[in-house]
Length: 164
Image (cartoon, rainbow, N blue to C red):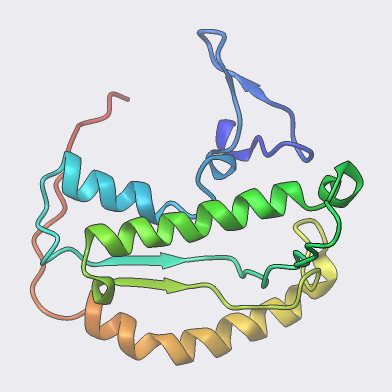
């Protein structure tokens, strides 16, 4: 319930202990940085052999204007603040991952689209999104197969068992 509690769409989820929770994407819309920190810092994986793949949901170039002649007040930022913070977090997260791991070991797939092209709750663009996904899957597949789906891999062992 907490992972679906995206503000403005769904209500906050309150845990059994009374803690209000919202979707983690509000803190890490792109979790590459925290993943790299956990891999290297917590799990002790070698940065030289760790590979990181992130598949995003699309992103749009910044629409912020460089207007140094006048300041930007509340009206300017009201509709831009959430996107600005999310773009900043995503960029910083990617940079963190590239810093901790060799930048060639970090692959981010997130097609660039025009601002406003897709909306979270608009189903009319599903066919367009499917076509975009197929196009990028074909383009990225050779690198993903080479870096993530070939060769011998150790079986996954959970770091910590989860009680059920």
